[in-house]
Length: 100
Image 1 (cartoon, one colour):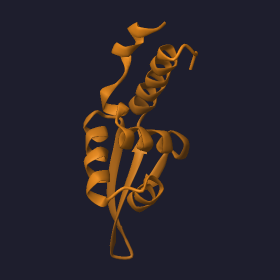
Image 2 (image 1 turned 60 degrees about the horizontal axis):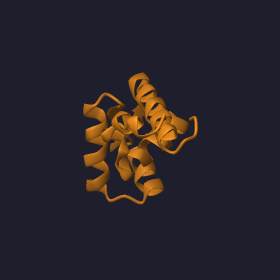
Image 3 (image 1 turned 90 degrees about the vertical axis):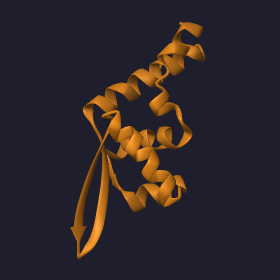
């Protein structure tokens, strides 16, 4: 393990905001948009862009519905996202010389 792990770092996850989303969803399984926005101290636009990128990679599933006539957007980590996140943590552990 070492520098060869650098090539295993998933660029989709590695961004600060996307990493925050993945860390939160790995624990919570799912969260609504407002919850993520608050926890990550993100703007609506910034969070939307990063969720879209994770969704396009298949790491997060986005569902939209209405509750009391108000739109509700929820994000959930997918099985593929969970695997990618585990691989990311393993590669990061290899880079810093620790097993994940």
